[in-house]
Length: 510
Image (cartoon, rainbow, N blue to C red; front, side, top):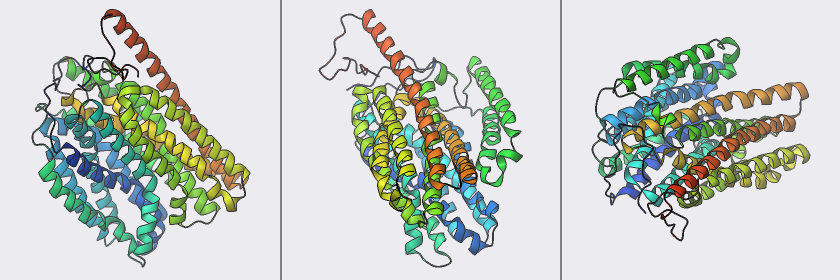
């Protein structure tokens, strides 16, 4: 099926319509997904090792927390600039540079003789991961079209969901196998052989050349965006060390800097320059703005809920990190399975999949909250499994279809910056969720002394986040149906195929 016409692309952008399928595209995708899984896994895998890190390196809790938060911070800061650089200089080149940096910084982190060295290595590792992430989604847009692109994004969505959910499981398993005072080092060393093999395969399989977007890099825009994102994210990643109360003043500073960034980018566009992030992606590209907003509010609950479950199972029920990770495995299984299915259905059903998925997520998380409140703590791990499986199935119908629907009309020449913008929005949501939900858990726990009630409160916020995303999904669905009806009225002779798709490849329902 031919790609959907990019009639709503920002004016003046290269359309990228000339397309010949790369025979190695699925092999190339496999490499990028393995690397993407590895980088996203490193967001959460280290959290289970913080106690042993603190003991072995003689660090304070606030200092050792930077091993986790520093990675998340630099990861989020570099996404949009790295996406723009990939568009301008070539995605293969940025992918290889980012992967080399990730492997070397992983080795440096594993060999760290002090906590300061470890934090520095993790900051670099986060920068490298942020260089890699937007190239993943951009390469999918570059290599795939039509239903194949939906399937590719389905696999990408499954990778995002699984890596987020299994981080604690993988961390617990590695620590269990690599016992001893330096066992935590293998959390970083394990990236080295995988990364070396992936580098060799990427060197061979990824397509050469850029997207035709070569030119000047908007240095002022990069600086404004980086400073604004840093001001907003820094208090959030420091929440456990009192960052929200000490650094609250950075939020208005960040808002001002981001407003200046938008104004500057509009000025660059008005002068026919090359912005680091084209504002017309939000204002004139169908589905991009609302899809990014939906991803942001969904990730508030999606990312924060894992910390709530970890706190509940480990501090409330006395589970080991591995047992705690295994308890939430049903969500990962459900999410991975449904994300792959959703990738095959998104061309036909579009935004309806997201709406259905969010509804199922809300039901599953609400059921999980009720189960935790009603069943005896000794049975909670088993009793909550069906609700988590249901939530995971719904979640798989959210992430990958939303990525596809958000990026489908973006010109290929802007795919990197658009993917970086979408993932930055998701990182903002994740930062809010990982700060707010554990904070709420501790607040309710200190007031009631009841671990199930504290966990249920966190789940309630996740339900609200999914509900907010559902509202956005319904709005987009209704708007898309109205636009399709208007288009059909203007072209009464247009026929639909038996699968409900327009003859020119435009999905009939969103």
